[in-house]
Length: 263
Image (tube, rainbow, N blue to C red; front, side, top):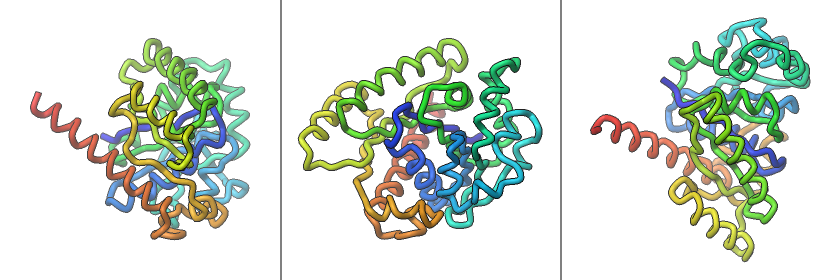
């Protein structure tokens, strides 16, 4: 049974898509079977995986509107080694169509269910807003990975997201939890970065990942080549950071599974 993680933050430009693409490739590098679901109409995770969003015959739109089953929507990322349910601008129409649909908040949960046994990890790249697509992702996942910059406004946005997660937990997904907070574009020379880091540690404790993703030119360049950083420049600091994050996530899951066995 796979672990499903939504990578979410309603603030744009914090590294959600970068995290999805590079974490997927890093998990594959550790011999895990990975599916990336692009739930953002901008289709950046699709393009960053080397798949042309403008040339799609089928996409997550068809999946969400019930036109096909998930196995027919899968496209392989040759550069990353994982599978993708791709997205493009059509997904905006799906959100409108879903507004009048029955059980609209659980649509993604239903369509992902048949794939859970085929993958070790399913990552959902959420749009930069708390809309119906994000609600679907939060209703479908086991946990939320929140990438954020260590800035003042990011802290303000984080509190709104935590409130939304708590509401979804009460109404739609009792098992939902914050899996981890990931510090992105991290610069330890900046005093504000260190102040925000301290606040995150105080509030979230061990849910704050030890791994920090630094500002890295190679990490920023990789998407324009349709590749994760691991394929573009394996030795870059960005690629190494996401490999470390994958290892941290796997170790957490193994420790949690061991606790369940011993209980």
